[in-house]
Amino acid sequence: MTGLAASIGGRLRRGWSAYRLRWKRRELLWRAIRARKNLTPVADRTAKIGPDGVLVFVTLRNELGRLPEFLTHYRRLGVSHFLVVDNDSDDGTTALLRAQPDVSLWRAAGSYRDSRFGMDWLGALLMRYGHGHWCVTVDADELLVYPDCDGHDLRELTTFLGRRNIPAIGGLMLDLYPRGPLGRADAPNGAPLADRLPFFDEGPYRCRVQQPRRNRWVQGGARERCFFADRPERSPTLNKLPLVLWNRRYAYVNSTHSMLPPSLNDLYDGPADERLSCVLLHSKFLPEIVAKSREELDRRQHFNDPDLYTDYHRRLALAPTLWHAGSCRYEGTAQLEALGLMHSGDWSRREQRG
Image (cartoon, rainbow, N blue to C red; front, side, top):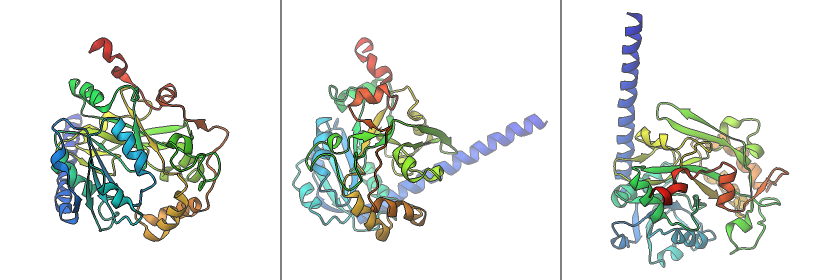
């Protein structure tokens, strides 16, 4: 009877957990529906979205310096339309985006933190425009790369995924940084990101599963080494699920780090996962990081508990040097595969298997 009771207890706990996760997902979907009223159209070109178009969704503020390469990079990958929420930019970002024929732009004047760091706003757009499309949901400082992306665009990749009934792929957010102190890049404005921030940490990275959502938690790398060595449990989460065949019943929970339903989180198990995965080249440490960190000390918009990260932003504002003797110079996606930071899985055998 003890074994039977334990079995019944386990089923009850699993059932209760599944029930709570369903209600959590409904809560997030309702938040997205309500967030629609906070979005003011600036340039609505969504009528141009084709039935097979790959879409990019992004919330941003004051990203004028990053946008030219961001747009060029994703256009080169085959993205057909950008859906952008501008959270009160005042540096010319709005004017640049309004002038792009493949960009639909909304303004949101509310609190970035209160909107779940922009995810309620993007949830509203994903629900309305993303359903049935392959959607890339990223930050303006993230450039998606994947195995052989120079020769095969997102249309080819998503066709491959669709034929195998794979609804999403995940990847590692890889911090790039300069050789010298933050506040100075290794190449001038307008140069490619990999020239301006040529270095990264190849590891170590660790991954663990968190219950009950089964979301992965990857930590490590340059920021942990430089800012959280004495408290690694607080170092940034580095795993993301940026490329998803969207369904209006899906919801991002914590930025793009985790999703509901929880089965989606099982699609990426950290850098050691040998299934097809990607990397997000993270340009957080371009020179403006110093001024933005000083601003964040006042705005307090980027963490659930900003007080825990006050020292982090103070240290960033002092323009430290992240480079060390173990830093790697970025050479391309083949290098990331060789280092085990992303994998091609069956994608490498697509021509033989069809």
